[in-house]
Image (cartoon, rainbow, N blue to C red; front, side):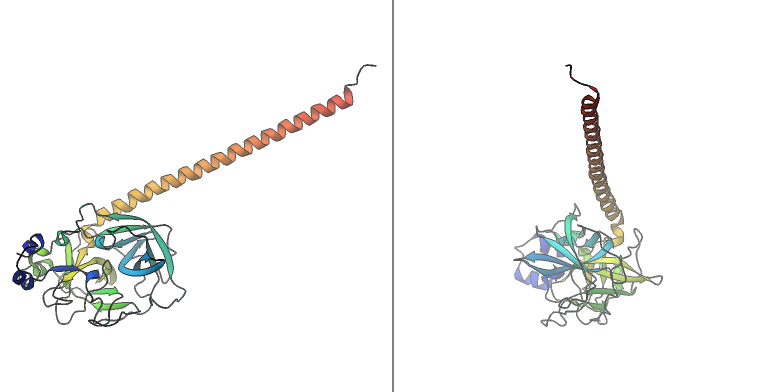
Length: 321
C-alpha cells in the first residue's frame, strides 16, 4: 500500500495525506531533538561530512570513521557530484578546540544497488576514501562494526548522535548531541501498524515510542551497546513525512551488519590497488635514482680516466726535436 504511494505520483491527495511517506533525514527540519549535548569527543568516531560552496564548507551529513582513511555514511548523502571533506574530532561546529582534523575525500563508493528514486529499497550506504589517513588519538578513533549478520534484540540500548535542531523549528545545535533510541526489532517495525513493507530486513529501526529520542543527521551512526561496548549498528537513513518521532514510525537506519562483506570488499580492494600503485611509484623512483647515480658515477670515472690520460701524455710523452 505504501509502496504504491512512491510508485504512483498521481495518487490522490487524500491517499498521500493518509499514508506517511519516508523522507531522508537531511530533508527534514528536525534532527537530534529531545536529546542532550554529548561530552566532548565521547563518540570519537563521529564524522561531520561537509561540502564546499562558494569557497565555504557546509555541514550536510554525519558519518563514521571505520578505518584511518575510510568513512562510512549514507548513499543519499553523497549521490551528487560535489567536493567533500570530513571533520574528525569535532564537537562544537563554531569553535575550534585544536582537536579537529580536516581531511579531503578523494573517492566516493556508493553501493551499486542504490536507487535514489526508491528510498525504501535499501542499499543506502556509501564509503568515502580519504586523501590521507587520520591521526588516531584520544579524540579521533575508529568505530567498531558488528559481526556480519548480527541482529540485536528489541529494546537494545542505542544512541544516535549528530548536530541538528534543538527543537522543531528551533536553532541548530552547535555542539554534538546524543539521544537515547531503543532498538525496534524487524518483526515489530515491519508490522502493519508500524512501517509495514517499507522496512526491509537489511534495515534497523530505532525509537518510535514516547520515551525515545529523535532522528540525527543522515549518514550518522546508531551506536548500540553490546557486551559492554558500543558498535555502529546503523546508518541514519529516513523518517516519516508525518514528522520526527511520530508514534510507531521510528527512525530507519541501514543495518550495518547486513553489509559487512561489501564494506570489507570495497576497503580491501581499493586499498590494495592504491598500495600497488604507490609501490610502483616508489619502485620507479628508486629505479630512477639508482640509474642516475650509476650514470653520474660512470661520468666521474670517464672524467678521471681522461684526466689521467692527459697527465700521462704531458709527463711522459715528449715531442720529437
